[in-house]
Length: 338
Image 1 (tube, rainbow, N blue to C red):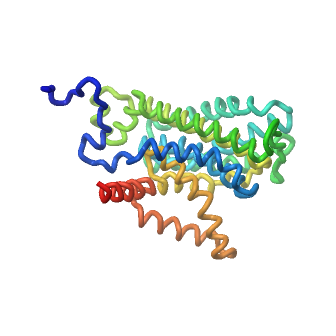
Image 2: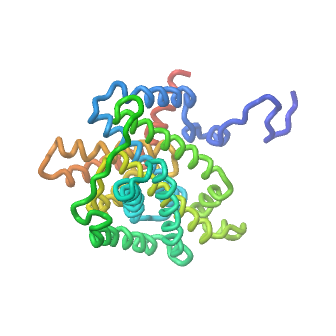
Image 3: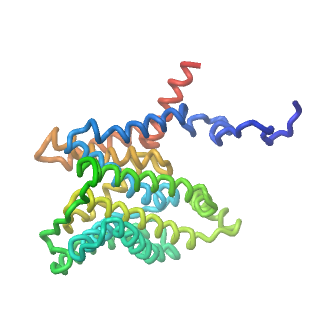
């Protein structure tokens, strides 16, 4: 059958972009089987893990949502943000105050935290009109530094330096920890689907174009300030949503939990997991949770030093992130079988 070059014959599937370009490492082999195994494992997890490990697994999902949002700015936009720990904290405290102080239902805390941090992210993204790179990082750095002392200034509302206990959701069925896990899992799946659609939209493609070649994108009519402001707003919204989920899971919030170190940890999670990838957010969340635990086991006296060395080792072994390393490994295995 004669076909026009570049067109897909009727009834045939279009090859993924990476395969069409000759680089099969850009897509995962066994994609459907991998997604099916991941879904089955996620559903079965709360029935096989003890409570403490299930709590850790729930926090992995929470941090994955935060890393999805941060990746919009860092991975897709090519900018540096050191303020997402603050957005995370705002979302956590919004949920905590609504539940502990006013007794409002848990589902209501998610949209309120998301809308509040969306507005704050929009305001923080306004410097993108004139700033980028390290200058933009310094603006977000200031946001992260200001939040903890500000939370301590209003003890009647936030509990001050002592923090605030928050009741966790009670399960109509299952155990409480299993119920919280499934609630967080549902929000996480929705967050992944939302980011996938957002990055595939016109705005997401424009953000990638601006990262790759800003001058060429401007010539084509793309407005950098507009797209970066939108990216900051959506990114902050995801961080705030993750903060609300953190309150549901941990049942306690304190200003010191959302210090500058959290912003740096989230940034490290994006870089280690693999920027501009959906899988990188999940892998980075595993690292964010797993590396400090391993560091404490190796040397309880200096977990920070051990964590730093482990992160440097991961970056050295996988400069494109753990996602890139796994892709190369998967395609080498697939190549041997064919």
